[in-house]
Length: 95
Image (cartoon, rainbow, N blue to C red):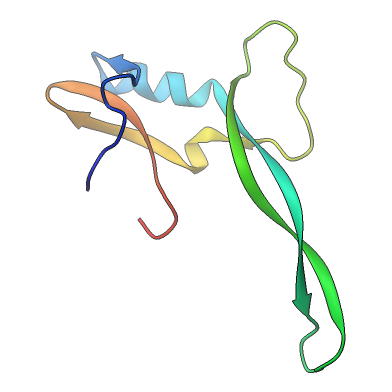
């Protein structure tokens, strides 16, 4: 697995510190509506929401307000050890 932006990423001494950092964050996605055909028809279409442009937010920051679409970061990231340090690594679709 190739890792990107390791120079600017937060680094942790232990796996538990890294897990705690992940646990304290959510991903807030924007949604866009995608036109898709209705199953079994040729001429009817519907619109379904699709996630894009996710932003990682610390739930402990001042002024944080949870929104309906917020998802826990641990759904998308996990600790990975590289060069003796722990990094919170986001898994891309297909990883």
